[in-house]
Image (tube, rainbow, N blue to C red; front, top):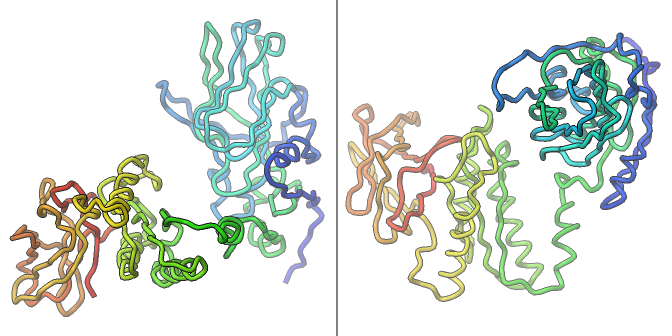
Length: 445
């Protein structure tokens, strides 16, 4: 076994303050890289890459750490410097440097050695003004120190330089980059490795360089409870609205027990059975190994607890956005639950159809629902129903509305045993009640 050689590392401590102190710490962060921003700095030994030229105003050319370093590698997070040479035709004009869709997570942006902006925010458009006197016609240097502490890092969209007379794309063409430091909370580990060495030594680095523990990491067990729930325990509450679950699609088997256990624990701590209304996670294209449909079903099954309700969002998901933008309907459905159950508005139907029971027949299955409201309807063709026989292999089934029941059948299956609906990560609802509320996906045992 080879011995780990740390000669190319240099540790820099980084405290993790909260609130207003955080930006002060970042702005004073010293990483032995002050000369990287200078116009005359020799970057000839840095890695070079080229972003292909594209036409069209709305074409984005994101440049991310993950394009160069495999997701999950040690180099995926940390400090990377980017430098690019560019010319302008009107250097005496005021210019604006636009980073469309932002820089993830933190940037220090220099033009010709002058710091023109630094933002502690990852995902919003950034605009930095370049006053006259900084630019020249030829050989300007854009230098950006990008710090990524979690997830995807880098430039999220196009980079444009704009003046009254001209707009110029800077994200495309030739760049130089240097991965300068790993981020291992609470320290930065400076290194002098090239990109090829980072990739080749990744296994060795991960085995010997360990991430610290972020005490305020919201993903750590009990942190959110201790920080956000425990302090308000002395106060009375009317009820709880809850919208969560996307991060649990990988452990959906445990979710029902964890979720209902949390509800019961909170009620015990407050001393009364307050209403708990929650949002079923919306359809979204998760990875092949993740089953959000099973997580949705775990949420549905949690309704056995008294004084709970679920806002169904099977019709307002977005295939490529895990957080769909339509929050108005989410709010309206949560409000309907509270108005119906707690404020005497019994005329309001509080939920979309929920699976109640099914009856097996020789060639078909009849399904009954709660919360049919004024009656079941379909939007366009009824889709998403599947049945399985004794072999437990599900196949698509034909679904028919019949006296506020759904009858499903397939000529390929005689004596069907099980049925399910909407059993995919991403699915567009087809079954509703006449009040316009979608039915929940489900799978029978």
